[in-house]
Every structure is written in structure tokens, then in C-alpha cells.
Length: 195
Ligand SMILES: [Zn+2]
Image (tube, rainbow, N blue to C red):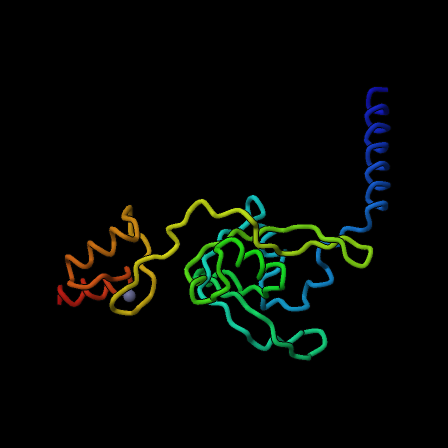
């Protein structure tokens, strides 16, 4: 009896949810965009992250030809590359361009280099359907120490080593080897000293 009641309740909730869904239009989990261009950041990349957000630092913003994998046609798009190369570049639409400019009060792509943004997923209505899209969030990321010290040997970012922060690693290697180094270069330098 109890089980039946629960089932009845559950199916009722499900029914109401379906009705609400229909009223609002079908939520498309970006299937239209999926596979269209897996070379660029999509909602599916962010969807699998905790909090469904990513805080990324802008490496550069450039116009590039993007080939639509479905039609084979290319189109000029504005791409935002991230310092974390584990994340694919993101195609910036006008809304996201405006959000970045507003967040940092500049349209100058040179000034935007090294700035961090939070990327999230928002639902937008278009053509009677609801789509999930990538959106730069309007709030400022909490961690703003985005610019890491650069390795004076290879030019790459210096990351933390062991329990040292990137800054500590830079000053430690500078003191020891005369140049601020990333851990790869510092390892090479250490070997050179030994031999
Ligand atoms: Zn290096």
C-alpha cells in the first residue's frame, strides 16, 4: 500500500514535470552543437566539472577561421585561448565579448591577456526552444593571481613545486641557479650541476 502510494506520488511528480517541460519548450542539452565542432570548448566540457563552472585565464583573443565540421565551410570567429591548454579555445559570441569587456572595463585584447573569467552554462530561449550555452559569468573570479611567474629559460609558466607556490619556486630557483625556472628546467639544471 505504502509502496503504491509512493509510486503514485512519484508518477504524479513526473507527469507534472513533463507538463512544465513541454510548456517551457524542450531543453536541448546542446545536442545541436555536439559533434559540430569538438575542437572548441562546449557546454559538454563544462557540464562534467564540479559546480559546472571553470575559472580560466585568457592567454590571447584572436580572430581565426573555424571550420564547421558538419558543413565543411569555414567562418571567421573570435577565439579565446586559455593559459591552461587542457581547455580548448572558446568561440566568443557577442554576448560573451560584452561580458568580458564589462567585467574588466576594456575592449583591448592586449589588456585582457592574463585576466581570469568564470565560464558557466546558461539556458537561453531561441526559436521556441531552450538551449544550453556557454556564458562568461558576470562575477569576478575570486582567485585573481592569474599571472604566474615565467621561466627565464624556456618562457613557460612556473608552477608550484612540492609545497612551494609558483612565486616561491621562482625565487628558489633564481637563488640556486641564477634564473627563475620551471620545474623541468630546474631539474635539467640540477643534473648539469651534478655531472
Ligand atoms: Zn622552463
